[in-house]
Every structure is written in C-alpha cells, then in structure tokens.
Amino acid sequence: MATLGAKLLKLRLDHKLSQTELAEIIGVSQNAYCRWESDKCKPQTENLFKISQYYQVDMKEFLDDSGTIIITSNEVKGGNIFVNNIPANNTVNFQLSAELMENFLKTQEQISKILDSQVQLIAELMKK
Image 1 (cartoon, rainbow, N blue to C red):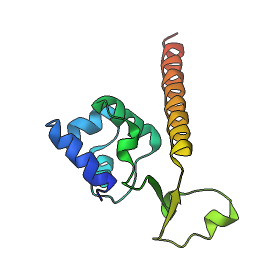
Image 2 (image 1 turned 90 degrees about the horizontal axis):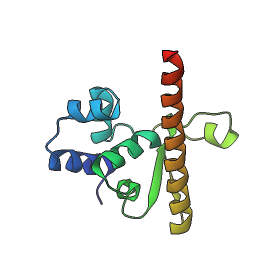
Image 3 (image 1 turned 180 degrees about the horizontal axis):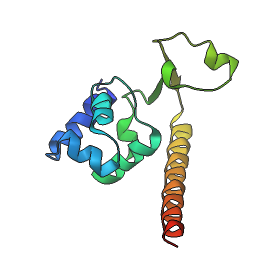
C-alpha cells in the first residue's frame, strides 16, 4: 500500500519537477512539501486539491488503498474532549463509505473553490 508521500513523490517525478518547483506552483515552502513526501506530516485538503488540479488527477488518488483518511493527532486542534484524549504520536483512522467519501471530497473541492474566489476578491479590493 503506497503512502500519501510515496504517491506525491511518484507524481512529481513523473512530471519531472523538483520539490521547489512544485512547492512554488501550489504556494507552499519547499520544506513543507518535503515533509509531505517523507510522510512527516499531511498537507491540508486545500493543498491536496491544488496538487490534484495541477496534475489533473482525482483527489481519490491521494487516499490509501482502503479508502481510509488518516489524521495525525498533532494536526487535530479544538476543544472537543474526544480530540484532546488522542495520545500524542498516534493516528486515528476513519473508514468511510464510498458515498460518504465522494460527498466529503466534493465538499472539500467546493470549499477550496470558494476560498480561491475570496482570495481573488480580496486582491481586487486591495487594488482599489
């Protein structure tokens, strides 16, 4: 089973890009991108969406082979009592149905598009 980092590495090498080049394309630091490829941390959904758009692949490509989303405990923030009880350095695996996963990915894509629109609107307002 290929990790997210391995999938990102393969896509980048297939397109003959350096980490620096791809990081600039999606608007993150090379160090951040390097950590994704080495599976030291996971990118935010918005960044995965940018990567999927650039490579023209479905975001489902970034899931593991079982369709599981893995969230590391140090990336989860909030006051939820259940979240706070996740031991450090462990992961929480959520197994989602295919239909729920499809809806989740569509929603994330819509959110990313809205955020892009907001950024463009703010840039236009800043010009005035």
